[in-house]
Length: 96
Ligand code: HEM
Image (cartoon, rainbow, N blue to C red):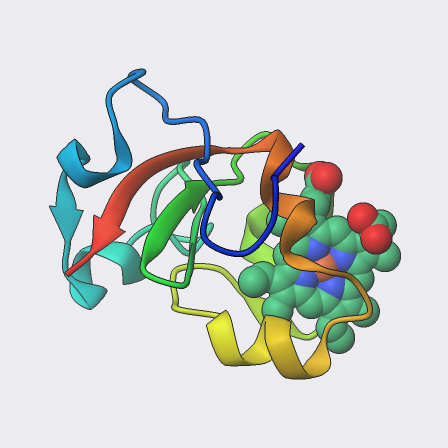
C-alpha cells in the first residue's frame, strides 16, 4: 500500500491533504485520551490519528500505553508491530 519511505500519504478524515489538516496542541491532544471525551486520538510522527473505533484502544488504553499523546518513540521502540497498524485509521490533524 505505502510505496516506501517518503511516499506515505495517509487517508484523512475530511479528504483534504495532510498539510491542510487542522493543527492541535499537546494540550488539545491530551483531552482526547479516552477518559475526558469520547474521542480517542494518538499522535505518531506529527500526525494525529483517530482511533476511537478501535477495540484495542478502549477508554484510551492500549497495553501499557495511553492515548492523548505523541507515541512516536513508544511505537518505534516498544511496539511488537510496525506503524502500518495506522493504515486502518484516519488522520484528523497535525500535532503543533
Ligand atoms: C507494548 C507495546 C505494544 C503492544 C504489546 C501492542 C500490541 C498490539 C497488538 C497485539 C495489536 C493488534 C495486532 C497487530 O496489529 O499487530 C496492536 C494494534 C495496534 N497498535 Fe499496538 N501495541 C503496542 C504499542 C503501540 C503503540 C505505542 C502504539 C501507538 C503509537 C500502538 C498502536 C496500535 C494501533 C493503532 C493498532 C491498531 C488497532 C486496531 O486495528 O484496532 N501500539 N497493538
